[in-house]
Image (cartoon, rainbow, N blue to C red; front, top):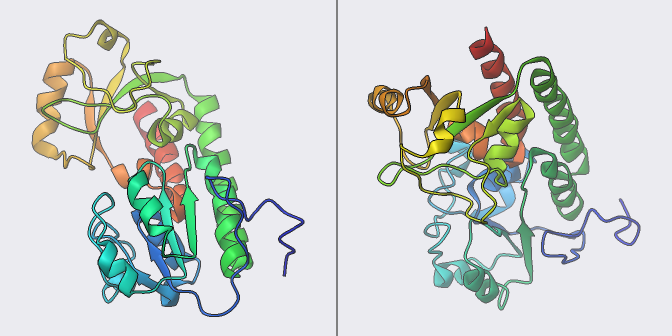
Length: 273
């Protein structure tokens, strides 16, 4: 067992140091992609609560109580479950809610992966806290391989500026400082426009001058459920090639990160061909 004083694996995104947990853990995850990670680390038996958006893996989560959404957590129900640990995310959960949870839950693990590479310390953190270091190391090795695969595609093919749609009415895209943009950038797709005003999910109009620099448009399957009926509409508005893209493969961190990068690398090569 690793010594917590010798490593930084136990420090979360809020700078809090956690201790390796001894005894049965009772975990509530309020982050869909990290609920999946908890299960993939072999900890499904310790999971006692989740959000309604935590849907993977479906079979393992059927009997796990739902506590509302990521932004509207049922704190009374959460208290009743008496968790030892609650997993939250800086972007996905409200700060005031997390502060309130910390009043009655002994361990609140704060996460904030901004790039695919940030999953590596996240795996180590969960592995160290919950005693599943071996499985965490396996996930890390798989992610390192997937990152190399994505980077190879990015090096070998010309970079392209792309528009990545996440919403309709108003039309919205993602800024370069998002996890989605960082994932796409690894394979050589740069999200455009390159805004510097701190707006991470900006709205835009189809007559924006920067659209002239965009090579293609992706319509994400989440959070807006873009479908086949929207592809022709967008292609006409953008006057650029448009296609659907699996939003879970671009935006879900945790254990899905490696599969997401492999998916993007394959898609990059497919479209280049």
